[in-house]
Amino acid sequence: MKEGRSVNNAKTFIEKEKVKSVKKKMKTERFFHYLAETFRAMSDPTRTKIIYALSEENELCVHDIAAIIGTTNSAISHQLRTLRNMKLVKYNKVGRVTFYSLDDIHINNLFAEGLRHVEEK
Amino acid sequence: MKEGRSVNNAKTFIEKEKVKSVKKKMKTERFFHYLAETFRAMSDPTRTKIIYALSEENELCVHDIAAIIGTTNSAISHQLRTLRNMKLVKYNKVGRVTFYSLDDIHINNLFAEGLRHVEEK
DNA sequence: GGAATAATTGAACAATTGTTCATATATTAA
DNA sequence: TTAATATATGAACAATTGTTCAATTATTCC
Image (cartoon, rainbow over all chains, first blue to last red):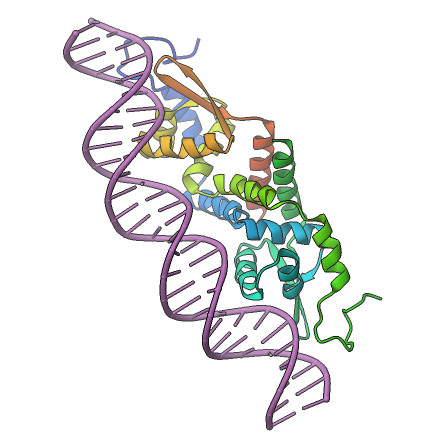
């Protein structure tokens, strides 16, 4: 029998034990902020397009990404900065061309899991 | 040898074949928007806390989530609506108490992949 | 019925976001 | 050196977001 769940003499239905137990397992404020920021980096259509393109082709320059998505180099460059800051992409400069790719296999996994979810909904 | 990559007579370094090939694989505008929205649903610290709490305890009422996180019922209720709209959580109403839980195993997987990424960075 | 509790909702507000446009920096070619 | 190309960046703008506060709805207890 779970405490607090059934009608009882308490003023509220708060399940104190559950609250206590989960509270103990909670991570730091900083952790949740960083986790949220990671998801946020993937939360814009332009950025999901960029990530998808990179997941298909592995390495692309700014100009090509803009051509694929059909927008300006500037918009792509701004978004790549966001992805760079959140360490979702890495880059390799060759002459005046910067080639971008997904940072590591974890990003591929995380993104693939999102793809799978959307494809199945 | 990759076309367009080495110095050539073209005016630009755009790799036309790559662009063409990735363009062909691109999903619809709608798909990328929905994918972005899914990640966006997980892109706020309060919401990552809610999802984390639900991943630890499986079923929690609004009041308990607010107690765990340390904020108001109203703020939690607003955020739960966002999560409900994006089908990340489902609910089960018992009397005047609404119990929330993660919608399906895919949400658990997606969130767990995010956790793993952050824990390893 | 009336009081209390749980949750939801709407309005309002500051804060953040993503794009565009113009400009700047860096590299290459002539 | 000068012109062209590739990318990056700063300012500005509308649009969106997350919280708070107050009010509302729904249910239970007396």
